[in-house]
Image (cartoon, rainbow, N blue to C red):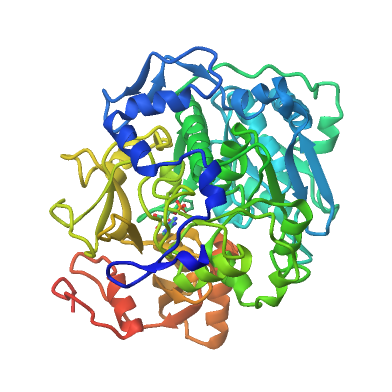
Length: 637
Ligand code: WT7
């Protein structure tokens, strides 16, 4: 692979060709041919993919587009994602195959075969039922990265309840808001988790959030760290106590559901206002996550798959839990920090467990790269055959390090572009695709994208434009929970005439048809690959008694990709100081979670605004970067 590099037409980047060993055995041997067929008749393509799954009753219609943009897939079909992620494997050689290898930060290990996973999931499903959990109800899950997290998700799905996983790094405000939006009656949490040698305070945050959440009746807590936590008599139960009761039988029927029945909601940040709960469904999501996972990562029975994302984000939902389990893979999961106790932690686990595919974010790669090559060099990483990247554009320097040092120069890197809303990967190579570092390459099967200007006309090669998706796909979010109008407004209004989905990203397309994602064009910030809204950071700041107005922007950061910088107008009587600056940074972190902690807080007298009073963040950004401020005609003064 190394010897076959070439400079592309504009001389800007090298083209990396896949090694012969990969090409020879790949599920998809000819991207172009498969793509063209899929686009010519997408419904036939998706029907073929859906036939690989277990349906209790076959669908009548592949795509029902009678109520755009509320597309329905596989209508009339009966399915449950658990029928595919667990049940059907029990009838095959996979019954005794490892479904999961989990390592805790302190070094404890849990392994579960598909048989054992089924028992745990069934037991917990029965526990949930005994707590009165019903089909369609939303259970909120707030947990560290321990096996009980996927078990709780799968148990909800099995009985037709929906889950709403709230990332374990979020704080009280974020958790309480999401519990409230979901009207959750049941919360599943843990007494804490291990992170960098320390115990996180999950249960006390959960307790505070529950104090603000009148809907919660039951809280089930996994004992992970054994630290002292406050439990309330009528509300709190220990997970292991419930799991040892006779009601926790290991036999539980999987609920037969309609293809369009909702599987989960997952909150994500948007341009304005509060985070929105995107809804994904059993049928389309099962088909889409398993199909993309199989094609992009060429998954084989002997693979050991490690998606290093937290299950609290869509990457964890689609490619740590659902997609790989549907494909009968062995999944790896790790609880803690990549550099604990030393920066070789990940590399030692790859060697120890013989991981064959690693899927992670550019931020994680940059973070580990900082410690130097000596850490990975101490380990035999030759079990790896493919690598993956997701969450933000990967800079060529990190790409090359990942490729050379981790992949030994012969593991193609699948740079995958997608979103919480898309449910699964949309623009990504398959293993036979020649790669250009920094490009997610081309759209996947059945996916039609375009990059357009302000008049919705496709831009020429090399020109920047807005990324749109032209046709529906089975993994797409069905709606925003409780707010279908906002779903229409946010994603479908701008291109209503064309019927396109607005991705919110800007991108370029080169002469070879390769797509280069530039970044968000709205007020969404990607910090370390995590998605946050400027509006959320600003509202956290103004919730401090000294703050009158606030603006948040993203500026480039070497490891995090972007970092949050804020501008604050104080209330009369409050005075700026280093101490207050520190206090405000902590305040945002306490309200939202450590990932939202601003890099800087600048005290200012005024903020640049439009005449209609909207903060012009791009002006703040241009000033900080010392670049041209652009068109200022709408600036108030
Ligand atoms: C936004 C979506 C999809 C799972 C994790 C993120 C950015 C995502 C890439 C990539 C460049 C990327 C986009 C997108 N993004 N993957 N491979 N190259 N940018 O999901 O939190 O919903 O964020 O992440 O800006 O819009 P998300």
